[in-house]
Image (tube, rainbow, N blue to C red; front, side):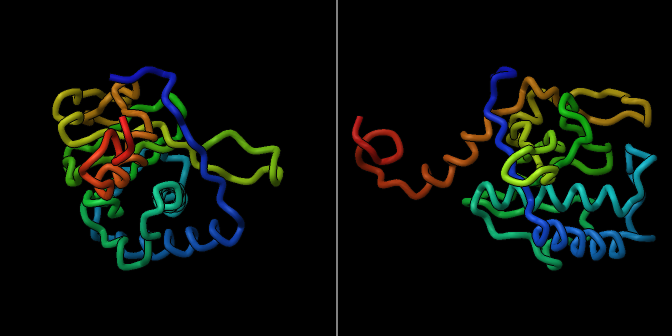
Length: 194
């Protein structure tokens, strides 16, 4: 489907955006306590830190797609994952600590949306501001991609369902989805001339 040459855009959060995400992470963390089982993979990080990374990823995807930004209302603890609305799709956003990490879901989650995006922490930037934190997009997949490519794997904390990164789609394809939905019907691709 795709190769390692996928376009992997980075969104660098400004300090006020990072603080906004930190506040949402606090809300999400407090809402989940005692209600949702802890499925943290990185046991060295606190639940709050894990939620903070997840919210930054959700925020970055929303910014890159031009989708509505997440709010407290969007963070209801539904099987411990949040989603955003883009074009006519519900899009799940997952965060992985490593650039090479696969897209995975614990068995209890299920693929509840039309599409999902996998993100990870981007290498630190030198410009425009040193050490500006960033979230990089690994790629995305549809529910059909999930059904086609998922397999069981134990990464050391129990069996999960996963899809290898090599099966993720290029992020540009997701960005162009809204253009396809709003383009005039006549003409060539995206309403242009062929």
